[in-house]
Image (cartoon, rainbow, N blue to C red):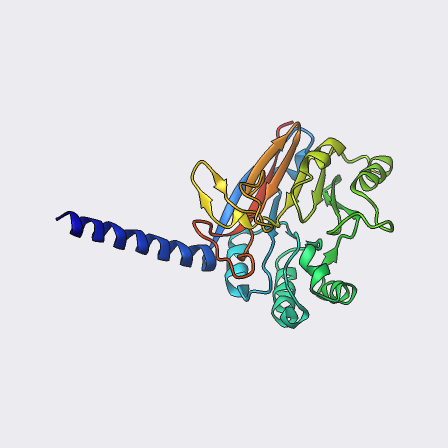
Length: 273
């Protein structure tokens, strides 16, 4: 009897793992978050931002477009690592052009765009699809007469000829009267620094949800195999700033995801003023 019970439990365990492996690597979840701030202009109350991150060249175009059509975002932001090499451009270009038919699209680089691709050529082709790349710069988003700031920095940021996040924020503060600012940055680990600069919302990716996620624990591994990364997915707060961290749309190399569905966050801005 005990033997049969053990066999049954083992079979159930294997089925759960198999189901989770499939869902975690092929099924997209829309994570919906309300981002509340008293700095947000009232005109932007209900403004929806959809985020894509860390696709790594996978052909999930139909699933992504289907998900976004349901969410009806005002803008789509892409936080890097959308492809691993130039051979994946055909798939990604088709996706980008479909995205621009849904909403304005803004893009910042991840580490893979720099490590694996001809970066400058790639970014030129991305712009050719109607996507705005944010390379240590910002744009103004408007609703009626009110404005918020959307800024983005390259990954990696730190070369001598690059504008740093602090220089970018100083430029915004010196030239714009907008009270609410959003920063797109591939990696989340400097969130505390970006919060200290005064960005109200930071949108990031890179960590892939920690690959394996457990209840009450969160993600187990960073892409560099750091155990229990500080940020792995969801919302985090520091002072008046919020980090929205996508769990991404792929595994890491040959490592699959487990208990960690593919993620398209949709952020709805809410004004508390």
